[in-house]
Length: 456
View: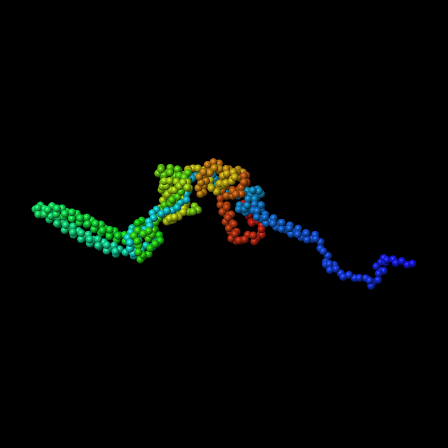
């Protein structure tokens, strides 16, 4: 009896029964790279972006970047850190001087007189004897209107006057005859009275004729238009040949007086009593006219008067000053700044205005101790101020040295070095010479310090 046992080895199967399957496409792909390498590149790029962003942000913060001292013109980092040596400064002494007290106000230049010239007779404009913008004298002939119609009217009035004068003379002769005839009782008295009234009537007619003659002569005068004041002419509004109407609403030309000229300005109502006190005492207060930014003084004049009321909408009083304006620097409708000198403080403590600083502690100055060459911050009280000086009412003594240049790099107790007179000018001149010979200092030496930049 035979038993069938299953084969235990592939070799027992015939090769004809072996089936070959086609190869799968995925088997041809290269082996997959590890994912860790991509993650490393991403982290590397993130780190580079972060470093770049931090560098850009730090470059935009000038206070975080140490600055080179650069001959006193650098930043404040080294000076305050105390690692770059004494800070060079310029000082000036507290001294006594006279301080002028000014009242300042915004003013408007106004012509002293303004005349709108119009014709007083009607007629054709014949001639113009000026150029626009001319400076003319009072009584100077400006224009002429055709005088011929008015000359004819004058001749007619004079003829009527001669006619009526003859009638008056005849009436007077008759009156003398009637008087003699009345004495002889040859005529009634009524006839004599009538003759007297006729003579009086002719006398009245003569006066009327004379008035007509004078009016005709006056119209001839009005045909010649003259300057009523001395001043500067504006732009002409009429041309020769135009028919001019008497007393027209449109002026032919405007004439303004510029010498002298006035400025109307305002001051606060709280400052008015000080001005009124001087005005009542008869004190002549000088006034100065300055340009818009107070950089150029235009003219010097005298305070004249004050308005009789205060503007309740602004709380300011209007004042007037007069200027000779010989060089014509002031022009109508020009805006100027007025400085009215109302008083002078004599022998008071003053410091240069650039020495005074403002901070959280108030108004202060840096005072240099000559023994230790250190600065100390002192609060001060300021009184009157000018363009260059400030009055010190408390906080300083005469003779103390205050910092006037370089204070922006100082703190309490900072070690300083006082610049010698002319030292700063010499440094600037040397820098100018270097700049002229080598325009770009970074070309030689790269980003290193400039020569002498760390020395003060």
